[in-house]
Length: 435
Ligand SMILES: Cc1ncc(COP(=O)(O)O)c(C=O)c1O
Image (cartoon, rainbow, N blue to C red; front, side):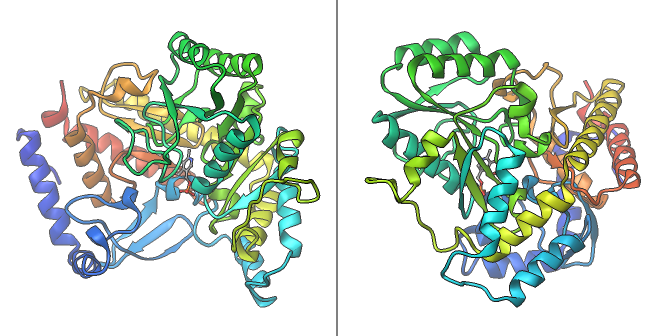
């Protein structure tokens, strides 16, 4: 597939041309989309140049694009696709709910079931409320923390991502939620504690992911998480764990792994069984502020907050499919895969490594040991681009930034095949990526 002894630029040029030639229908569809959608896209994270692949259908852990290529799905819809694309238990739950009618405009039987399932699973949640997305869950948590504490500022971490209005990648996005953000550095205890001490009386909340997901799958250090808990206690700050992605990494989420209970938790992605969802919950005394039986209760509404499809699919998923045992098994498979890939990379001249925890991981082209998000700043983006195009050409679907999350229907054979593909990539591209 690859030509040896050429430059990275030449290899990329060749891979990109080959991608364009093999995907004419996706290309045409994307051009047509550009006439009605800016950049032909309505979900920025899916865009990549020269044009994104357009999928036609999916089953289990497989995807088929418009040009007829078959892929094994290693993206897993950025963790939301944990159940794969056609889990029969989820499909039944959705069909049954659909048969009984949608948009009831009333309380329904499913929201209570999902609320119980979520609160049982994540013990720091005494009470929970549902939203339509993880972004909305974080909006509600952060704004509620401000209302409850009467303070304005919220601490977040550089390079973090908590949804479309919480983008702290390299500098804050101009369309972030316009509140008084205080920024600190992930996994840097001293720096963070100094920032918290400086703003102690003005901070309403600390918003943190217990493993940075979109920031490159960088696990938090236990001491870092514990120090946040200690300072939040000391100053009456509401500690919010964004477990929209990471709650799948152990039966009770990463809060269970760290043994640290946040005051509030936000959830989303797979929690809706593949349907649209978000959730925020936490300590009874906080969440009771939303109890409308109370004078001056906080109002939180949303037409689709209790939509029957998400509530029913989510309940079936959490109670019947992603049992604590299934969670442990999937995450061990992820740990095993990551170790295997890192062993291959260590034996290769290509400076590659895979970070993450359990079933979530990210490929980085750097040999610097990655403890903090800044450690991947010097990664070669062109190497990542070549990896992406090469994996697509081998029928492995993942995004440009090298993120992966395993879904339940991925088999051991799929994993073995992927490992062999990465091995082949490391061998064939060593001449242009090796150091
Ligand atoms: C950690 C984290 N929080 C929140 C969100 C936002 O969730 P949604 O895309 O459902 O709005 C995401 C999405 O990727 C996320 O990774």
